[in-house]
Amino acid sequence: MTDTTTQTRHPWRSVLFFLRDVLVIFGIAIVVSFVVKTFLIRSFFIPSASMEQTLMIDDRVIVNELVPQVVSVEHGDIVVFKDPGGWLPARPPIEVSPTQAGVEWVLSLFGLASPDSNDHLIKRVIGLPGDTVQCCSAEGQIIVNGVPISEPYITIPPGETRASAIDFNVTVPANSLFVMGDNRYNSKDSRYNTETPSKGFVGIDHVVGRAFVLSWPMSRWEWLSNYPEVFANVPPAPAAQ
View 1: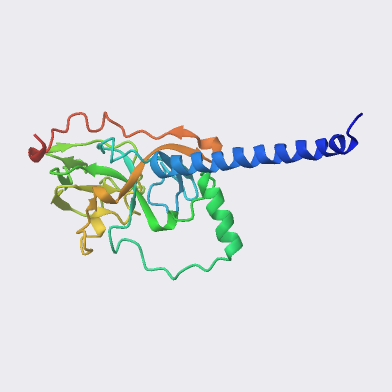
View 2 (view 1 turned 180 degrees about the vertical axis):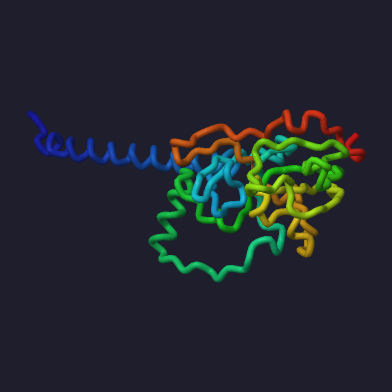
């Protein structure tokens, strides 16, 4: 004799099993995305013009979070870092609804939103610990450890010939970096933050990671170079020898 009750329940059981599998897959995807975002890579959008023309406002970059904990920082790297203190203007807290906050949190797990981008900065590494960085040579170039460097990535206004509008001569402290924006005449970088607690340097422990891909807009997708040829002739800092 056929059990009609059991036959009737089968379609519902199939639907429940399907929903269970979907929830399990979704849960695994969230966990994997969280692990990747926390330990490997994450996305940031560009909030300012300080890196033009390399990076434009609202561009999105993918950041390798293995730098600097696993992979060391190199000359020319484009790094994202937390404010060392006093670099960013004070901002009032932005009020968001619980729904909006929840949506942004979920999207951030998949790299589709970057709610904390405005709390970070992005610049190019010019000086490593122990380096002496100066401006400028007779040709208007930045000098690193006595060697003038030719920087093809920088933007300077028409009529200007110097890689920096101001002169400086600094030695980078241990565990710190000297950073500059590619948009040299419109970047409040290490040159302009000498009165802050960090004296204009960025502690390596403040670095979130190295930007290695320009991911959005897709029309401008590219790998982000650290231009090793620019620094090829720069000798190691005395402290690093």
